[in-house]
Amino acid sequence: VSMPDRRTVGELLADSEALARETLLDATLEQAPAMVRSWNQLVGSAVELWAVLPPAPNSPSWSDPMERLRAIGEAISRSVTAGHWPGQGPTDEHLTQIADNLSHAQHLVERSGHASQSTTTDSPADVQHAPGQVMHTLYVAAHGTVVALGAYAADLQAQAETAKRRRQPVAERPTALEISAAQAMVARFDGFEHLAAAAYLGEPPSSTNPGQVATPTKRLETALAAWEVQAHRTLAARPDPADLVRISRVQALITSTTSILTEAAAREGHVDVAVIQRLAPSLEASQLAWSRLAKRWGELTSPASRTDPALVGAASEVRAAIAATATNQAGWAAPDQLASRLDLPNIVKTLHLSMVASVEIAYVVRDTAADHPGLTAPARIIGMRSQGEAELAIEQGETRYEGITWTTRRQRASNQLVPLPEPARRGLINLADDVLATTNQAVAAAAQLDPSDVTRSTRFGREGRIGRSAASRQITHPA
Amino acid sequence: MSFQRMDADTAETLAGVVRLLRRAAELVWAAVDAEGAGSPRQVLALGIDLAADEARNLLPDAIAVQGPVPVGDEPAGLLRSAEQLLRRIDTPGAGAALRGLRARVADLVWEANTGVDA
Image 1 (cartoon, rainbow over the protein chains, first blue to last red):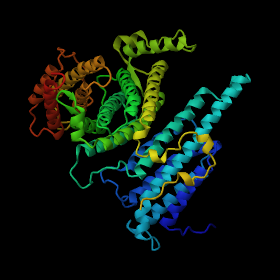
Image 2 (cartoon, rainbow over the protein chains, first blue to last red):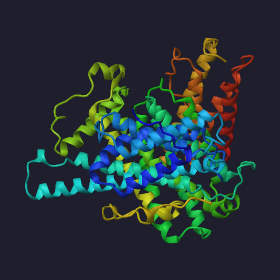
Image 3 (cartoon, rainbow over the protein chains, first blue to last red):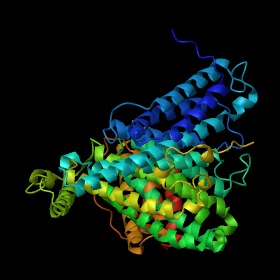
Image 4 (cartoon, each protein chain N blue to C red):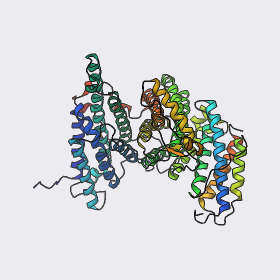
């Protein structure tokens, strides 16, 4: 019979932080797949605890960073459940233990009936600091997972190269697909870590007071945060192609706005000129990649298509906020106008975080193209599109598509809705890959604008850091 | 206005609004593509898309949106036509959604006439 757990909320959270640090300290490549599988349980427990805790000191009431993290955690989980890497298998003991601790803490807070003092031995100050501890735990655990995943992906790459040199049979080598799946998961956890770090540090360091009337800067920040969460919700619920079009169009507009406002910030001396010189071409490429993706998803829509009303609402607010902050009657507002309207340094940081979050949206869009079982398209256009994609694949050595006709004459005559043929699906995946590549370039180019960058300055060269003390990377709690 | 209580004339008029808005959006997106990255017309084009989405979501599934492609290649003119059609829907107690759509389309007409598309 196990002993009852008599720890207080403060003790449970302190233990969770310690376990997260151990995760980082002991991160090995072998654990990486199990850590990915455990992630949703950990985030789910954190979300439930967060919901019963008082708001973190200094946290703005209009933006809940945990909603953003929950959306990403669920998206990663759906990807794994759908059979993508790492698939089913064992879970990670440390992360599971942290999840159990957080769930236990949630029960203690709920049982006490009010959040200000959860147990007789928890002081109000303990509970007051709890949101910060939860966010810190998620941040450090995400960092540990990124470290383990980075080592895992690098090891696979090394194995593949060695096997190629030794001319081992192809069946015994890691596949390119497995390597790219592991690398993609590194990027997804990197985004999670990034957002958790920003939330922990009080993103963004705004001069605005949550109690004041909404400023244009705050309106855009709020609209972007709500948009990200809604995009994930819509994508999780068997979206219509029309939803994918709208998501891609909004992302393209956000990317253009990021470019305009960052350039204005550079003109005003808030952003280094060298940064904008690297960033501008990447943002342009990212915006065009989102636009191409929107057009391609548009081919799958029919006159009867509907867009999720909640998505329409969130998109309308993003559009209205961008129109109010960044445009005038002649088009984009001039840099001096933008400087007078907006808190440029902070809005640029917010837009950079939105760009980091957009990488995760792009991954989910890619998963939707790969997995959505109900995708259909009008026969005429999709027949031509499939043929074009098939010919490209055949040129690259794909033999399975040779001699296949993708739609029947009858389907084309009535322009019937037909299930999406594989080459057309492949085309959507390739375009999502373009979005990912260009957006990741933009994120890297803008790293200096990242409000959490101070915490991430030792990010690169992951293999070398495995096993090193986590103490140097620990963030101290705010006073 | 609930779907159940929508009469055939109103439904047909709204379907016409959807077609007009979709055609206007198509034309503005073509201009966006022609301008290349960062076109400010994206703001208007997305606004028209979202108004078309709202109009579509007011219609019950049973109503076919398909129909002839509206004549005209001026987004502002198509938007004006959509606005006029919406004004013809004179259902007493028209829901907030319909009133919101009218206001949205009127704003878009103004944007198209005064903004970069003017």
